Image (tube, rainbow, N blue to C red; front, side, top):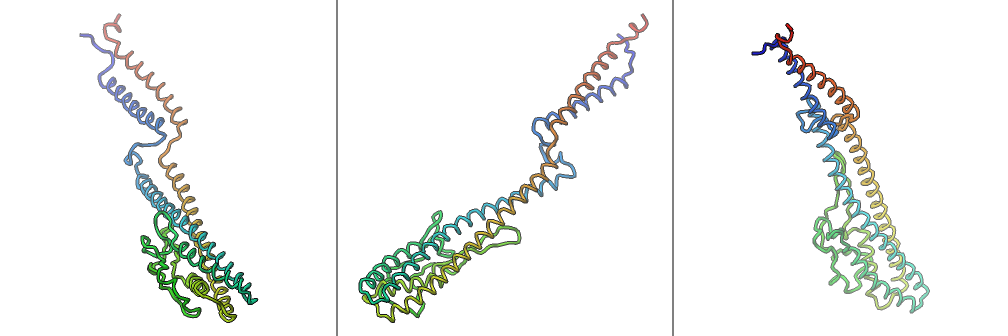
Length: 302
């Protein structure tokens, strides 16, 4: 049997040290390839809870952004529809003003235009987004306006009439942050829309218009125009609030992701350099081990 010069304990210690260095290198090689400190939360040590909390908050923030984007799209569709309503009532006022001269042609034109506009208003209030009726409150699967019974008769210029409405009173809102909800909905029975429907019904179903009728219709049309403009302004404000909140969530996500990256990511260049150093050390260690293990007492005594 060949007797070794090195003792077993010394040899074992050197091998154990080399194996530990190999384990460290294996971990850093994984970091180099993935760019992350660990492939599981356990590898983050005391930072694991912070990493988890940041990931949860980013996911929650994204849900707010997604909800805000959907709501903003609905508001944009509403805003466009209400803008068209403003044009309708403005045109009616122009035609009624022309009819104040007593011209039968102007009066007939106003009546015919109101008839068409009433149908157009019904279509606008039945506007859908992604298969949902946006002016129907919570009953988004139900068309809010049915003109079947409403469009008959002149009704009254002074008495409200929402018999055309088949939605509910729920006002749509969206949560855009943990502590912020934005109400943006408007229903088809809103007083502004009701006034438009009322004056269009009266004018459109009239066979003739007296000067008193025209004067009252003009007053109601003016009131309706102001009310509709107010609704449109509120929609604009809601859209601004939603978009601002969404942008804030995006800013937070960038901050949280950067902070999370500081906790989970590694400097790949630094790890690569460290690996090179470890490789040199490990090569030297194994060379020394091989040299020591090749020595024997017989060779030493020669």
